Amino acid sequence: MSTGTVPPLPGAVLRHKVLNRLKMRQSDLARAMGISTVRMNQIVKGKAPITPEMALRLERVTGTHAKYWLTLQTEFELHRWRRRLARRLKDLQPLPDSPLIRIGPDRSARVQAGAVLPGAASTPE
Image 1 (cartoon, rainbow, N blue to C red):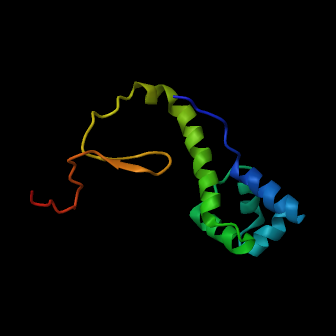
Image 2: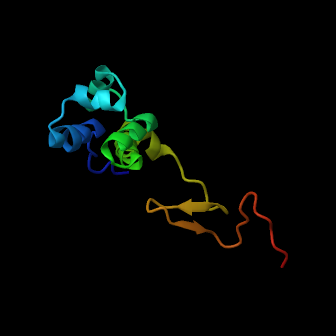
Image 3: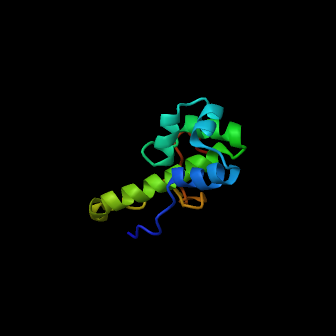
């Protein structure tokens, strides 16, 4: 399992795309978001994640969708955990084909033929 290219640290993106472009200090953005300067500094340095709350605050003050910030954080975390768990994950065996929905990274879903999804009413034949 390849760990791929290292995604950017969300705090670094915040620093480059918001703080630097707007020529804004961390304390100014923190004030605008209603958080402490310490918390802002932790996010920028990667010592604290961009949580859903922080993503919503960033969305409100910067106009950048919260989902953008959460996706950055998720991609960063997934990469980090893939690296940490690489050996253990390699030893895990996939479940045999079963009547489950398979969802790919592109969010496309495929339901195996004849599968009855949980909670779905079966249709008489």
